[in-house]
View 1 (tube, rainbow, N blue to C red):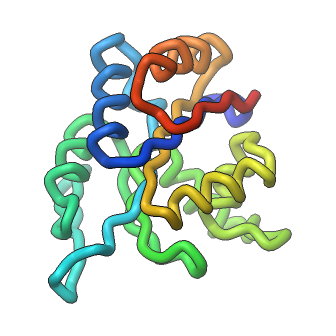
View 2: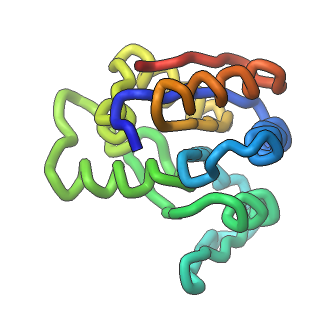
Length: 170
């Protein structure tokens, strides 16, 4: 995976984000190069949890079916509690990038763990602020990583989806 090429789409609803993922999958985009980030803390229950079942996670909460459906497609999953952002579910290669940033003490310059992960794949700090603000507003990020060609392909596919915003970072 290239550390410097990505396209990021912001989606207002989980349905729109899921539609984008399905369009990428239908078009043959490599699902190992796709990450999804979002929140799901609005639940009437007090406990929101997960467990790892092999290489897949089980999740309960308001959007459990949404996250469960994406876990069947994407590789890598984690549940983070990030100060200032709250509870985030992250799917895809961005999980290992965030973990690597945390383990390597890369979280500097006022960036959250998520921000450090995004920064390490070449996303500028002003864009990170925009993405974190979107997450605070309960929106979803769909992030395609890879070569310049991979990112161009993902961008052309995502342009036809119900995104709020779309940006390429190279």
